[in-house]
Amino acid sequence: MKLLVCPLNGPRPVSEFAYGGELRRMPDPETCSDREWSDYVFNRSGSPGIKYEWWCHIASGFWFIAQRDTARDLVLATYPAEAARAGLGVAAP
Amino acid sequence: MFTQHASLKAAYDVVIIGAGGHGLAAAYYLARDHGIRNVAVLEKGYIGGGNTGRNTTIIRSNYLTPEGVKFYDESVRLWQDLSTDFDLNLFYSTRGHFTLAHTDAAMRTMRWRAEVNKHYGVRSEAVDAAFVKRALPMIDMECGGHAPIVGALFHEPGAIARHDAVAWGYGRGADRRGVEIHQQTEVTGIRVQGGRVVGVETTRGSIATPKVLCAVAGYTPRILDMLDLHTPIYIHPLQAMVSEPVKPWLDPIIVSGSLHVYVSQTARGELVMGASLDPYELHQTRATLDFVEGLSAHMLDMFPFLGEVKVNRQWAGLSDMTPDFAPIMGLTPVEGFFLDAGWGTWGFKATPVCGKTMSHTVATGRNHPLIEGFTMERFAQYRLTGEKGAASVGH
Image (cartoon, rainbow over all chains, first blue to last red; front, side):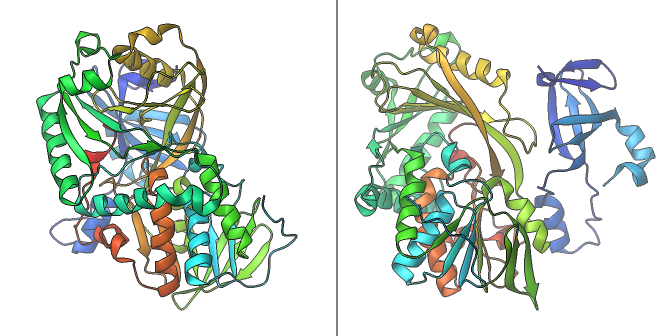
């Protein structure tokens, strides 16, 4: 069984979590073009690599960020979303 | 079965990336129907070693959108003559296909699909629980008590086929017509000048070509990165497993969306079983115990007498998923670069029609009418082709 370290609850089986997709910057919907908006809504970075992702511990409803290598199936770090916001320049791809 | 070519030529009229069913089918129809024979198919692994050899071999056309129904119906028609076409037995076996409904809401979708199907001449019927029980006397209609079967969508043309042979048949047919298949040849770059494809870089040297068709399923984003093209494609593994051979007892193909199961019995007697996608992005074909446990539990809900049957093998493939569960096919913003991708969990059944339509598109430079609902441009236009309701299971 694969374990994921929840920043709130500690190591838990991965089946207790929901994957929320990659952390992405939303363009300003008031000023961006239709094409920029569709790029944000639909397009994804599909290639393997180290990615910053939203995950949720379902039982406690706690959302956090995981840094994960999608080529090797390794979780490199997990931390609360606040830390990601504070250090957005560093953490965001 | 295939000619071994010592080296790549300096130039080809068309280069196809990926020697799976889709790539080889396109090569076959390019040579047979369009007379374009100076074609190279490049494969970084071996023929049919990707999702062509990893799927659960189900063929059906009981889709939800008119675009999907017309497209897959043409595929089923092509399937039925392929063994004769190839002079190779594909073990194409028409079984009938039940999509079980366990709720009234599911039954409503079955009626919707049946009506759309019948409108386009595809044989599908919404049937009641008694019909299901008559066709499948061995099934537990209560599914262990927690998901009673209330009816189904019955799709008479549903079939299975031997998947490896599909790649071999198309490959051999293309090979005999002069197409070169190069295995162990990985594409490392695509050369573009003035917005036009001019060549391909490989681990065995450079090739000049004006046309490239990309048919690489789970590896699509890596190829698109070479051209700085963006799509909604995301990659999740899809696992499957097969039991030891048992005497024939299951004739039709059974799908349950609520229980996340699809199962058929091969001519050898093995049960081939699949379920939902793995829940997160991953570019690995590793297998998990979670998957076997979950799928086995749901199999036993329907067929409790299988408790003593052993699972022989499990494996995974990389699914190139799209947000609307329809593929991404045809022309791209790079002239001479054609895409056959976004085949997620539904690509095997489409192999013949993809070969037909993509060969037409590559030969003429215009999208085949059957793939107009599947263009890359549909996302920027917010015109999706919503096919999720026809997915086998709730992925």
